[in-house]
Image (cartoon, rainbow, N blue to C red; front, side, top):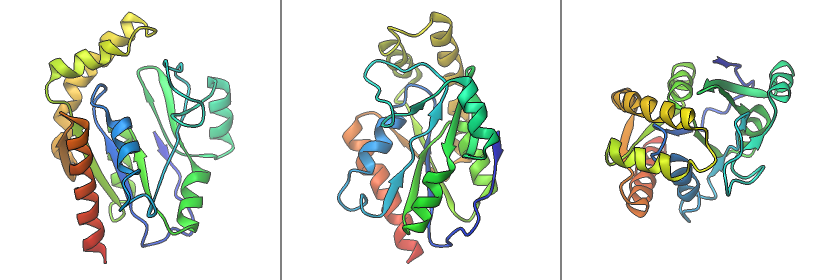
Length: 203
């Protein structure tokens, strides 16, 4: 993973990173949190580039920017990707333009990243980055969620996601905050409360 520092960063803007193992519902949680009336005008959410295949129901430019491996390399070379990582054989990256625009507009930022991306960003920007780890209620439920969306996913990839999820739960203690996504509404309320508390301390 590589991270290029953004020039002219505002000291006020915080970067909230929501991450966790596959099957925890972290992407859906991040979207729903930003729809909360008390937060939506203060935050921007990134749509990442990825080289992985599009899943059923995912929309280009809404869930991810789906690009080829060749296009991803071109974006990297052109310095249009702020941070990037490789996960289960596919590349993921945060658009630099998004982060710079959010900072110009005075918005806080929410990124939905994998474990490596979250910890790397925390190390690079310790004063600005707040990490939130999303745990599944149990590894059994995480496995069921992974299998439930795997109708077009290669069996070997499903197996890798399940094995990796069992390892990634051990990283929770390295995060600033942790929550369990048992029911989505409860997780939304908890994540919203965490963010509001952090922002209140900043004032």
